[in-house]
Image (cartoon, rainbow, N blue to C red; front, side):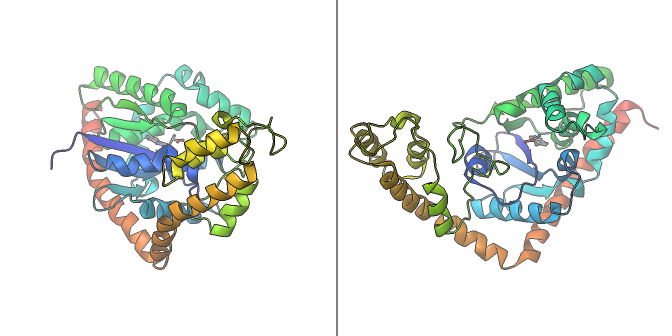
Length: 328
Ligand code: TRP
């Protein structure tokens, strides 16, 4: 089997996945498995940089793994594992930190943003977050890293660190290509913020039908459309945007858009249609997830087996790096 290269991607263990996670990342992870050797990591150590309460870490890891597997991320095709199960990453993180200029880290927009978000918890690990991420990627010699736009500065940083390391110690590491994941920014139920758990403006992939209906009814549509008799603007309506993605008949959204413009369909009616289509679209996922959840121990076994494979690649790269640096 000839693959185009090796992909690495990681995501923090955020628990049950929602439409935003799926459309922004997971869907693409599944697709990449066909053409690339893929390494997918649940980055629990990265999660520690912004958590003081770690009580839910195990549960969140498990719930996210369930959704990943149910969505079609396949342990037969890809290496799927938990970051902290491969301790080599922490050692490589230390080696890379020695070729990382401090100023480069403090100037990163992502770091500044975190400082604003958690002024009471500006820890050393937070500053080193991108170094750990670089270690993730280079440890598995990935040449392709699919990320959202928000992570692009981290990838640029990774590429710089690789060049610096290789200049100093020889061509050991691979400089990864950035592949920006092309997805429309998935807005939450409020229609103005990115879909996310923290704002509770999301719909979970495994949500029950009643929950899907309830959440969709709260969606904000065109704020200028006060009454059913007002003409609406489907191009700015989030129900329209999401319905287009999940509607089984591609001609329907265009019809609804027309009816919205000439005020022959109301927002409530459209929401009801969208809810039923979304329930149908997510049903297979919900069923597969329930089957997997019947045997939790198997999920942990899959993750253990993934870590075992990951450790083989990792220890090889780490050995090369230590030798290149000249550690006795
Ligand atoms: N920093 C990424 C995020 O917050 C997660 C991550 C960690 C990652 N290591 C990675 C992504 C390596 C891509 C490659 O989403």
